[in-house]
Image (cartoon, rainbow, N blue to C red; front, side):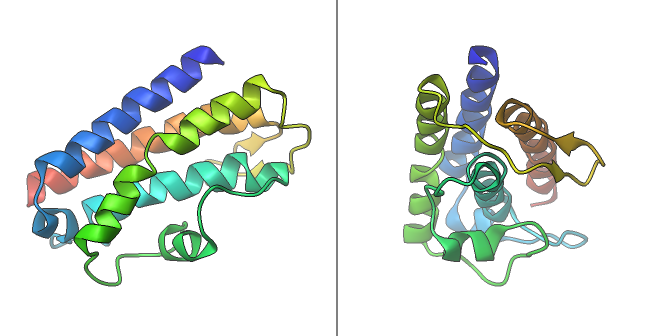
Length: 151
């Protein structure tokens, strides 16, 4: 699983670079033809990782329910985020992945509630959730690249 965690950290580094290389206005802009913006996509990856790995394992998530409600699947950008909110999202890029690795290494994940994702794949254990999450984050990285070209 070390390889999967390495991929996750590398992707989060790319997401961090988007935050650092774009203005608050650019991060919040929803271009014509899109439902969401760059910062929503980044926050959505954090929320989805927590839902897929922790919630479906019956463990407490490392993020607030308010954040989940704002950025979970099926939501869309409802307004501009403040710099403080962007900074909070940036601050959550790495710690959940690092904590997941620590918890995985310490065998904290003992149960998993099977879940069918939108691709119709069935996640049956935490390993599958971690691997699928990397795929999911790759989709959103592509979406962010398209958003960036539309700014």
